Image (cartoon, rainbow, N blue to C red; front, side, top):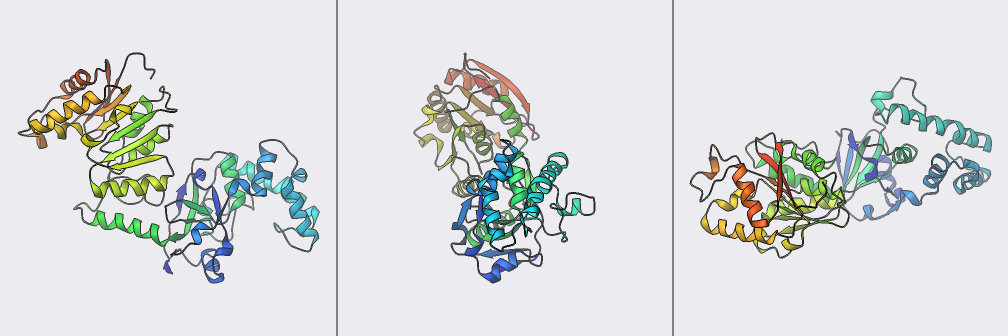
Length: 400
């Protein structure tokens, strides 16, 4: 068991927290360690992360949903009946020793907590200490945030704070503060792989910020400003049931964003190292994305794509006559695509395209794509921060 005593607050979309860890699967020593404020985080191997249960199947979740979404009385829920039985049997539940205390808890304290979060948001302990916030939100420990674990695949597992977590999900909050107190060894090793990779780069940064809460603080050279522009361009397109192929995906950031729209995404990456990172990060995202480690010229399913994403990649195929011929063939195979999202290179100054077989400017490149795909329409989406212009190309009759 490895211990890291310095663990910052992490902000997570509560939709990622779908399961609770069965704490009984942990040793008494470990359970005490990760649920106190004295230890930052623990790294542990083994199968502990496989012993979870869905939040939505908990009777307390069902009671919250029945009360706040359907207007049911707490007293009519199976949860209330169970807790009352246990109290009548001599147990102290939810800090309650009798039905009067339980009724006050569910009919006064919990609704006040729900309202406090609805009005003021879900704040960290350092933000709410001493400000008169509902007592169920406040703790005597500044470090006593909602505690979570991360499993071998990078998925978050809730460990405590069920009242606040359930409320945050019912209110569809975007981000809540949590403290990661337990990581699976396999996930910790993968995170270290990224840090080791970054150390081999002169800047010490990965190429692009990673869209995962436990990896987002890793220094990156680029924050992907392209994705919001691309998502905005596609907001009128019905992605349900449609396939998208992302050529040259790198670590999969654009595919991950597009999958959130409902596309069935395939991310193609020829670099073994980049494909490895893309596959693991994509798995951690929980999105339905196939990462294919292959040269795009050999990929057999280009013809099946409804949407194709080619950002800052096609110019590499113009550096030699042979590659240029292969690109022309590839574009012809894209003739079934309804939409192409394209980012051009900067042709002047030529930079890496010096002495290239072809070095078209943006307008020439778009015309070349239209000619060989048969797509009729194109418009600029503006330039990314690196100065490279983005375009959307679409066929007649396609709604955007």
